[in-house]
Length: 168
Length: 402
Image (cartoon, rainbow over all chains, first blue to last red; front, side, top):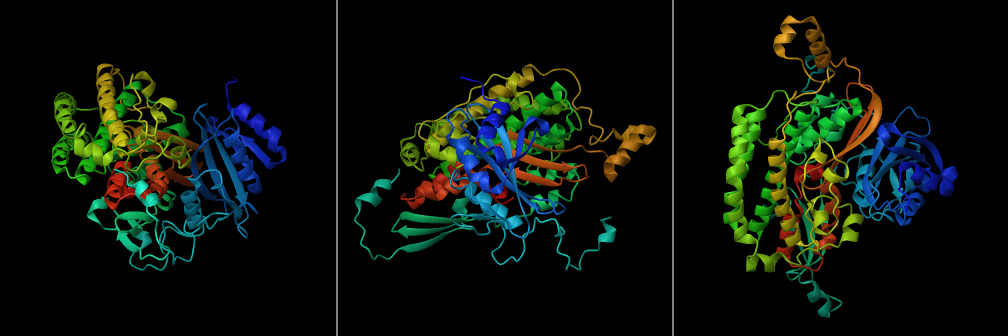
């Protein structure tokens, strides 16, 4: 059996989803692919089901915000791990701020459930097909998504702290 | 003992009064701020709905506004039962970003501290399973031993629970003779006391009856739910970050990965028990093979120069100023680093744009991910089984809510 490496994973993905892969990079040795948001569930399903690749562990799922990337402001980063082959790869999908929607990964990984809720909570990214997309760590009444870059660390209405003393 | 069958054998009438029970958020048996709204039929749980976020402290937002070395105290407050592992996991993430080599001695010292932290974490978890099954004695004994580990931390860094131990680059000072004496006396005295504690529970009929087949999960489901650490190994998957992706020279040590077979509370208990034994072996090997050399690496961007140099040498003064004022150059890039935390794979996903603070920092908090499976694991079991299932999963409120 062939030793599964990042290059082999990339080749398999390129053969299958050639047009869905946008960029390929290896920051600090980890294969990082930017893919189209619609293709995410199919790619994860393919990686999961493939008998050789066997990416059956969703390590991490989180959001990221780049306010200056026109049309691709919000991103979701997936880390998947093939335990048998010990290969980790990273997938990224970007969506526009005006309509932050992409399909859910809960159809492949149950662990995506809360992680997608967390991403929705902090970035407002909506995962279509998610069974129960609600806020998870913040209170339900909150009217904004706090990890977006436009929001300052502290509530700007506070008057009890004077920033000039803290050099901020 | 699982009562799963009960639910299937009973023919429930269509219209029945179910009770709603609010377990938590401040119930003493939940050992933290966890709320579960349970739908009960008598004493059997039909549905559970966990609510999390009661102690959410916005660490990821704060981390985007703080220099890297000020993120270490935030990591303390994730899994506060094993803070040193979190601290060092974070330090290693930054070192990976900067691509610096750390001397072997610093690696070995880190291993000693991390394994002590693992012992402390597992001791709390295992003795609390005892408490929840009605055996308080073992808990009080084991807290005396945990106290000794905390005294070792205190001797190294001055703090006990939220340790902020070590620095990016290594340690701020070498271990003093007093630290070594404390570690050695711990290694000498602990095994006998631990054996005594285990003899109370390991083959105890009542304990075994309560924990075997309680809250089981099979390997495939556990992987799909993103389990890691002792909980995954109890289900029979031998995934350990220390072996799979060795960090901090773990490849130098000879240790086994204990695994269970049926993923129930007893297996989780026994996996933790075996891991304590393995951790003791690792510490002994690290002490025996401790290399000579420096206890910190060359990381001038973050490692403060010695104070006497700052007062007398120009270069040290400049570096000191640059570090404190945040003028150091940090590479642009993104890096994921994982360590084997007390309860699973603790990951740090760090995106740096070259600025003083992280552009994005995400903590992969193991218990946030595997706690999702809790409703499924307790469905159809008795309320008292749900309590020990939760304590055996080692869910830490601080880590859950970030």
